[in-house]
Image (cartoon, rainbow, N blue to C red; front, top):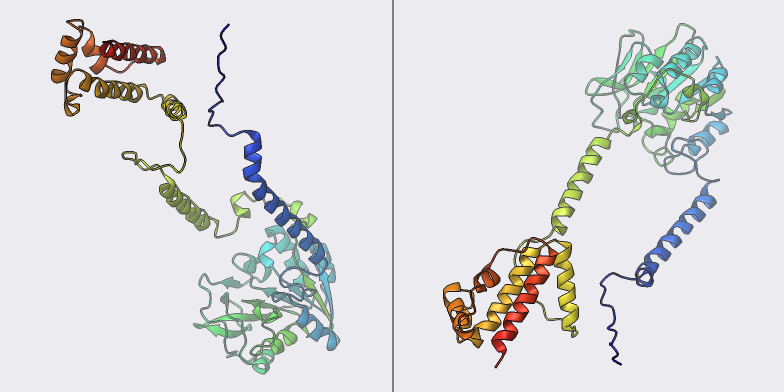
Length: 397
């Protein structure tokens, strides 16, 4: 009775336990970061609001100007829907539209019809083109923005003259209204316009919202200008357009997927593509001969052979595997038949010596040692067996 020894598996594929051991640190770190982010978001959700929100004390919030207006008897009410903003427009109120460009075209037209006849004041913060043309007919936005943020009034508007220099630099405007007040010019185009309405009210177009930010209110004449523009009526309606407003969905203003993306998405995508290409070049396979390295541990010959065989099989490189087998066989056979190793790969030197050593039995040595690559795996196995048999025959005493 014979017993065969069972060799341990030399599979190079990692087990599930090994994968978990390597990845558990990263997974735990990601879980901790996610838990911390959720906790911070929950804790701060009640205290934080968006930019230009009169309830926000953040640097880009507007709580400071709302409190200053409250000290002067001006009440501030925040609305987030178009219907609420239209209903609040009146001769004793100022309607501030914080983000006019977020409104759809039908929303802008509906808001304009309500404010034009209200007799109150409408303040538009940095409306671009074409939103300003619908909310303030006769006013257009210039494509080039102001290069300077702090500008001088240079107009006869009392509020601007009392405030002096302010951070109004941003979008520049042109108007066809001859009675409009054009203030804070940058390269001869104003960044603040006041257009009178036939109903007795007016529309103020401001090229930048900087004068309303908490961290900019105490600079230049920002506070004075903000209080005068927003405090001319006893009630201030602060309209923060919301994408969840039902009036935005009940329109025929269809917008494509690319219209919903930020304006700089194309350049951002191009930069990501270039970064990915550079990373691929950096991590790409280097062509050239293999460089042997001294391993820190001893590896069994069977594991090395099996690993290299799997690489050849994965790459379907039967030609390279056959060339390696033939080259190694020729190198070992040459000293046995008296041929220098330097000439082991020359058929004219090796084949005659092998034929003489085998006493004329070397008619098939040429295709065996220097033949074509095998066509399939079975032919490769047969070639290996034949080379092994040839070497045993040469070594036989």
